[in-house]
Amino acid sequence: MVTIADGRYDLPDELYYSKNQHVFLNLKKKIIGLDQIGYAFLNNPTEISLLVEDEIKAGLPFVAIASEQGVTTLNAPCSGKIEKFNEKALEDMEYDTYANGFIIKLKDISDIAPTLITGENIESWAINEAKTLLRSNYSFKIIEIGDTAVGKTAIKVRFTDNYFKKDLKTTLGVDFGTKEIKTSYLSTDLLFSGTYRFTARMNVWDAAGQDMYDKIRGIYFKDAKGALICYDINNPLSFNHLDKWVSDLEENLGKVPTLLIGNKSDLERKVSRQEGLNYAIKHGFLFIECSAKTGENVDGMFEKLAIEIFKKEENLA
Amino acid sequence: MSNVTEDNSNLVFNRFTPKNLTPKQCSFIQKILKKYILGMFICKKGGDILYSYQIEHTLKIDLISNFIAALSMFGEENVGQIKRIFIEGINIEMNIVSKNDLILVSLFRPNMIKDHLEDEAKKILNKFYSLYKVQIEQGKTNLSIYLKFDDEMCHFILGYLTRIGAYKENYEELK
Image (cartoon, rainbow over all chains, first blue to last red; front, side, top):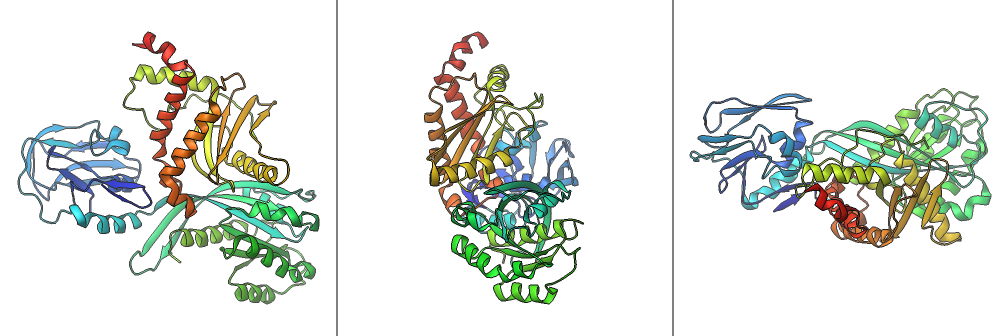
């Protein structure tokens, strides 16, 4: 059995697979179906129909599958007479595609396509295929830090619930918010170029900024995949304190994708954009100015951070 | 946290029917599960859910996992391990078991039999860790990696129902 993509897909190594369509052929059982990667590509298939009467011919279409992305026509990996068409294939395809989820059973097999992949060639081919299977579902914990009253909770609330509350109380210990975002990353990597679409559940941990929480704040950093370091562009002191927050972050998490945020862009500016940008460049952070009050740039910055974390997680950086 | 309401779209064993059960047995087990269990999830100690099995879909388990993780972290540092929480307003009890940097939280009605619950929870965590040790240690949080645990979870649930007598007792009637 070849298992790839961190255990997401299994491909039995005794089967034969068509390169582009992920149709498998089991010579022993004389069945043809769609492998696990092919099923994942289909994206919620709804209907399957046989396109031939009683015989399939190698390289020619034999079945059509309707799904959310339209109709996909599969070509036969060999020739042969059909013994059975499994009308209920889609019901079992997701979890049992190599046995009960087969599409057709043949009486006899001839003209096996010479381009089919089997044995030791499966792994390298499948790894590449899985990398271009661009659908994933992630959970990212984000720690949000910065001086008290720079608007950390307001940013979190604007992002998760899309509203602004003027008189938010000081956060005690830690507060949470969670929101799912759908985004994509266009990779220019030579081997795995293409658009990676993914969903990320952003779990935002808004840590209290007051000095009295300095001793316990560190425990809440555990397992965070990314960080937001916030300052108030109207309050130079909060900008001057950034070194403290950066060292807090590095001490607890090391280097993680980090976004430096200049909040309150709706107010009079006392820290220039260039100062913020220079600080971010110096530390290798992403940088954005936003307003939790108006919502400007809030969703965009979380998306930016999600993409950076995704790249790190999938070694695409 | 929102109030709990019944949801008729629930499925037994997440998204599939175990092959070793007849539809009649499945529907029987579904009844038992819906009566007592609201869901369970395995999250990292930091709060990110890796695997969830949710029967009551109105529960915001992502928020619950963050809450439990924060409580556990705070508890470990200051007051000791937190093992069970009862939320009176919405009539939910939560059993919390931590091991191998993972937390398993089971959410259930307070009238459920709790015998062996901790044992079973530890077994589930051990199995999960043994299957996904590499991915967990690499910090992978792509949930599709852990989806295949459905199959194992199904066996654990059946095992638990059998152990507390809920499944075996009625099994003959179902035949």
